Length: 181
Image 1 (cartoon, helix red, strand yellow):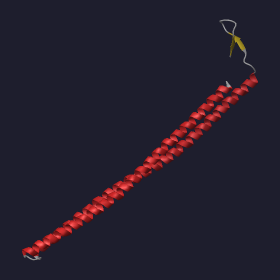
Image 2 (tube, helix red, strand yellow; image 1 turned 45 degrees about the horizontal axis):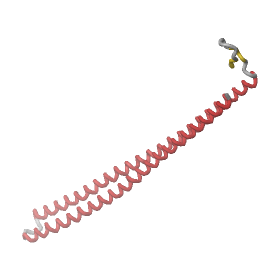
Image 3 (cartoon, helix red, strand yellow; image 1 turned 180 degrees about the vertical axis):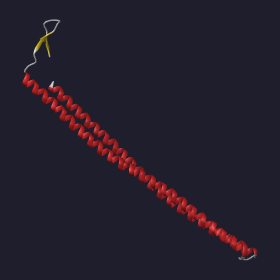
């Protein structure tokens, strides 16, 4: 009885240890995945920011080219740069600048959204670290409790065996074979 109890206790503790180890490995994979996703989103945000910066600069270049063509057309027509021609030119420059600023704003929004997602992955990774630590501690406490309870049962079993002596034999109803209680 005592040997079987000890063996069962040992197997139970080994099972708990392996379960704790598997949980830790699974949580570590979750942490690494979240951190990788966060880093990936930060790289994507930087690439996006650069891309929108290039689009903004391209918009400004295109606007300068169109302004030059408009001025050349006005000069060729001979109507001069006063009055409605000046108003059209000024309005065109304002719209071109607004287009460039809208591209920048769109880029900032996308960049901010990507960085916010990256921060959420970082937060998730920190949460999983805390959860993993708590699970590991709970597993250790559970193992210690099982060990203490098992050793107490074995001690009780050994004490009973020492004080009560050998188990008395009883005879069953079906014959003269001894039955151990």
